[in-house]
Image (tube, rainbow, N blue to C red):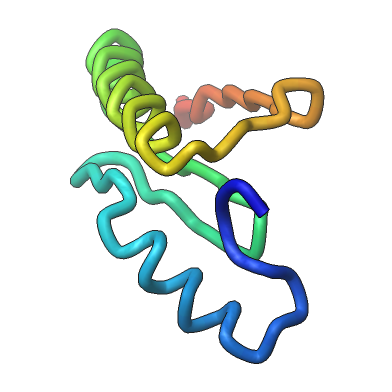
Length: 88
């Protein structure tokens, strides 16, 4: 095994917690981790500010992934963007 934790091993949950202890954090974007999946959720009043913040956390995440030799399967990666509707 080159990186990560063994799936189904009794120690895997503890090892996963140790592995992700220094996972990149942001005040404006929440990263939700479960097994080998991650969702990043965030919001901002201004789209430009949100995109700048998102890019910063993605750059930090890229460095962390390289450090721990974790490969992201880009064919399984999705981005969903939604604008909040304003009431009249």
